[in-house]
Image 1 (tube, rainbow, N blue to C red):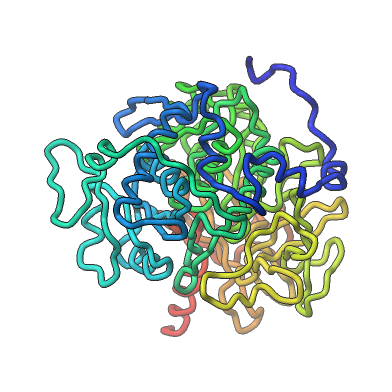
Image 2 (cartoon, rainbow, N blue to C red; image 1 turned 135 degrees about the vertical axis):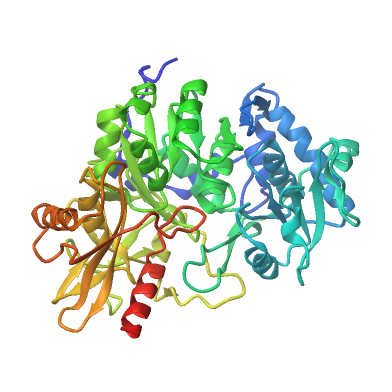
Length: 555
């Protein structure tokens, strides 16, 4: 069946919202949050016996190996028995510091099988970031490989270590030989049933300002993950799905591992690092029809040029974007050069995805809009006094706790959560409702620029700049100014063949004036080789602001 095959028409968004019942979502699970639930059953065991493909794993050298749900069931059972042999039980936390391989997926499922809690550790983390997360979670065991094992040396707080070694590598004294013990373990391991409020993941916020906070994820979050994959991603049985996000972060763990597997559909992992060339190669090789990732990755595909894109033009059915707002220029480029609609989705580690341009539901899609609240959530825009405001009035995006049955976040792990108050969870993002009920993103509350009495969203300025052929990437911040409170400053990464001349600076400023408004143009532009980003690809504007403030203090 091809992507043009006849499929049922998407349901009307308004009907999906009106007809949403949490009991209907619970009925789609094998278990029940009230009586007994196990994430390994939901994401693996329930599909055993159907000879279904579960995982396409491509290692760094390009070798592809496919795994069925039966194979993942057996691997996860062996890992579960290995963990139990080392004292790990229900409710205990196990961390994974692993690349994107079958070992990672099997470890996650094995942890869940025995009712334990999985903590992801991004392989680009250094020792301090890892140790802080160990302190937060109280992890009792960490699974890693020989390449990442040196990061765990000399830590004050470090759990028992299970290391994956290959032929010729030496196991360090005291480490568990992961492969040997898993091979020797039984493939008979009964899943441990838990309740919906019991944890199955321990996440961390990205830590762009201050130390990362622990985000406990209960099993009932599975309900929200499933609705997102169905209604927003519109994952179909004939899709070849690839979420290129790393499972060391929320979008990857929630929606590259958990989401597709719980729908009984195969996911894809690529061990190698991201490049435009490898991404195009894999899409072409596997026949990927549904792609998910971040705007940073999509801008890299754009930067690779039109010729590179031609070989997959028309092959993708849908592309989903999350992590940062999706600039309209990226949307237009994908439509023109890949012949595929790319839809923006909004969420947080604390929430999963909550506002989307849904592929599986019929509603207007406007370039630059984050979309509509996912069925099962009610969102509001709050002013500074905590009152809900109507269309075209900026405020903080909030989730109505009492009218959002899919909401699972109740607070940071062993920390106060000021963002939860008065019946709302405040996201910290400044948005506004459009008259049609969709949400337009303005920026993080700290990112919004106040200049000469105007409130300027950096996203709008960045989107205008990205329309210029000279601009590959851009970050916009407000810089303190005695006359205007702040001025708009842009940091621009140039496309090949362009030079950061005074003439180009003026051209870019005039471009924004014409595209946006006379007061929102950048009064200062720096041309830079790269922008500061988190390991997951989000631009760290606060670092740019900090550097500018320090520069002004020294002037």
